Image (cartoon, rainbow, N blue to C red):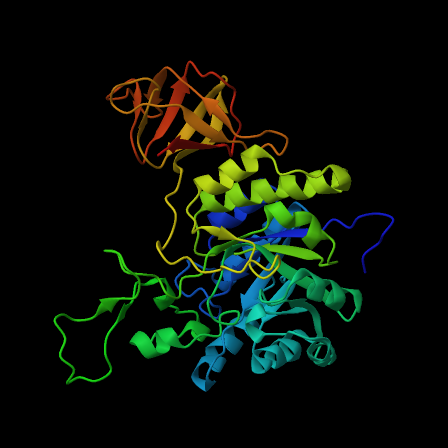
Length: 425
């Protein structure tokens, strides 16, 4: 598995909850993306992909030497099997390119994939299945599985051992949300309001604050209950921190896992771009000189700037405190305001998502932070003097309004198509 003479470069695998996120992930350095087909995956509230859109995504990826994995990891009942089978048969007979693998959890879904595609598409076993040991890996290998996405609950030494057995490829998570249950095997949502996590409809009751109330309804109480922890805001008893492994990447590189996965199919394109860019540079930095690996300041700044809960290294580094009791998430350090769609005579054309002003204005203008699509560039500050709307004069020559295409003049740096503009908050 792991070649001691030459360090293996793992696949950087990014989430694609929508076509925009998939395109962004590839632009910022992902080797592959995983995307849901219809509602047959555990992110039912992501845009996901129709069969036709999925075929177009695979075609786009093939054109740039990248890979796409189709996610089919729900635990379906019999009523859901028929539409799932219909979607698979349309994909198989639609004349479009097939995914580079399917991600499944349920044996019935695995059987359908094997029957319909006759072993022509590799199968990856979802972390939802909970494959914790070598005997389980051997069993799934006999069923045609070629890669296992290992549970987050394993530590680096356990992963290293499983990878070294050469039973099948191993994939691990390196960043994103974690679950208080065992790799998503949770029924709280189903009990709470009939939204079933194993069908992709998790309402995340673990992210709510809770109170303690007596089980005896006749007990004399001056109020409705007690906060589980002293304080006005209550406490988040079940709220897992977010996984972040950039600081322990060398240990994970040493496990022999072939794919490093980022969680986040419900996240924005800006989130995907930021996390992919950081881990792309981290992996490349390690590969270039393993002994000199050191966490760069801009990695931490970038990961702190996006929407996230407090970070943990989870079970990898035996972090004893994996729950965040006092907040549901950390405040994001920046907000996306636009993306460069073209460059005309050296001036960037910006697709404005949120209004922003020229730096230094009393109306709120401040330095713009650029997340560059160029892999060799680090994030940098950017200023401009004037704004012109692409289809005519601007109402304010120093302010870019939302949902418009604008041209920026007097720019301090030359931007490229795909660069993202952010303001600090």
